Length: 249
Image 1: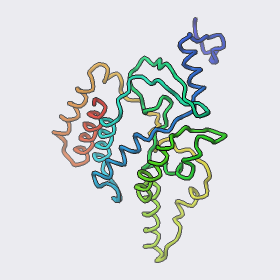
Image 2: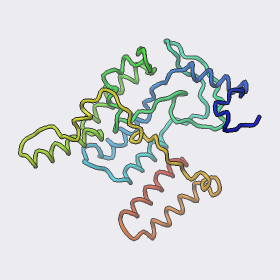
Image 3: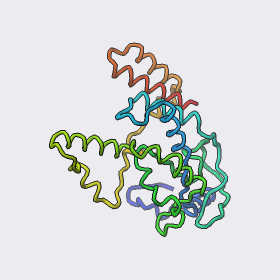
Image 4: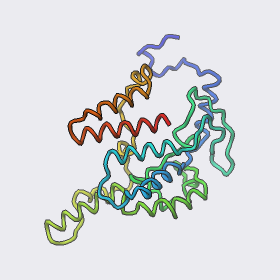
């Protein structure tokens, strides 16, 4: 059928049986917390001594990406999903692409360095929320509570910012007080911040990757790094190599 701007709702369009089944599975499932990324990011920061630093370099961040991508559980197709209630249900993963963003079919990755710690008080009640419930295994909640989140209590982006602004205010006035730049944030009950959680409107150059392959892009970045004329360029191209090697792995 033809699609025109006169009918953007596509009222007369019908789904194929496979797509209709996939849609039904997707809306039956509830999001499921995946702790794999949080576990690996925490492990890397601990092993590399990055926690406690005021800042880390783009190269350190890229090496962390490479570590996470290299250590993740390899998944080709998911076979189960979670619905409301204790029992999972079987799904047929109909995606034409192998691989997955998380270890769960409708997975929720956690970013402990950013905003994940806001979930800490409700780890054991996420599945029972009337609105927007997230499935989470008891063992995963215990791991987040005991081994992952405590590592970040002073090292999230927010807490690092808070410490910096408080120190600046104390130096300026001689007394400790709330940082004006954080007052609004501290009064918010709910907010959305998509950019820090890697949800972006930037479109990667897929055409280059498909035509040339990731290895060629890595080699180009390595070549540019070899001829970099300042430290910032050297670090930038080094970070590109690290991150793309992680994608290849």
